[in-house]
Length: 411
Image 1: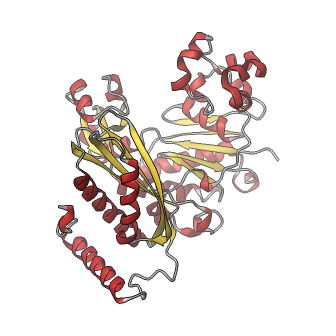
Image 2 (image 1 turned 180 degrees about the vertical axis):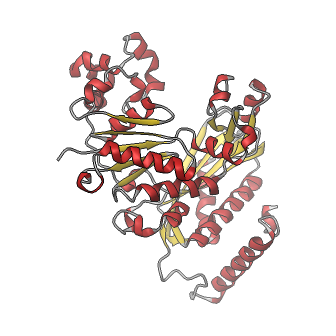
């Protein structure tokens, strides 16, 4: 059976939501960063800001110098989660096979649904119109025989509209597109080499042939050649790109791939802190790390999730990075379980005496709390006292804010 894969894409969704939330920003240069710090990097941009010379990844301070009239906002995560979850839930009315590709992007496998909903492009058109009507959001949708071509077609279509690549026309469609459309090519790293070889379009790669490609791309040559011909056999699968636990709550576990929530990988819980001043004092840095662990642990308890694997990444002022991984003996959501391992990891990773610019903690492999992991442990009075103190702190912060109470060593 021929596959029918749809790719739905709302370009710059966080920017659109910000404009809807603040209508006075329409047609003005807008940037969205992940924090309010002047050092924070720009994550999303409006077309007006791009025309002024602002680019993604640029520090907020540099963006405001280039474009003094730019409006910089922080990411409205709760609104984004709610909107994306609602879009996914609507899309799942047409198929249980879906894959979240990242902000504003979604794959749907419509194979075998023709008798129920009609041909793929009609279903895609209907979904795009429903989302436009219900949420006021314009998007593009493309239908093809695989994920690679449908994603490329939705980018070609642009801000709004439908696009269909007929079966058998994949190579002809991909040929005139720029090389950047191939996910197998590290374009940033190989830009100068591709220019020297006069390779600008995908059809140039096909013309080279597989033998010449081996010289350029090595072990990746076969994959790149297949992609250049529009061949992609990867399935649409919910674990392709992790969703957050908040999105899972909105969507509902009954919608998660055949009523099986375990089939959906939960995205890592990440805490990142951009230091107000560059720092190399171990005690101050460890105090910052403990506060980050507190926030992450509280979030895990609220979501009733546990983790046993943590990745620590530090970034020096000279932009060099260090990273390491710690694995706990057993999964937990308590800071007193995480901190000793992360403290040892920090002393192992922080090898240079250069000041740090930022710290990131990523809590990997999260899954629902095992029944035996109680909020009030039964493994002894000392542990019970710790858990009761932390629960009391959680309650105080829930009522009066995160800064209402703190341990002395974190101040």
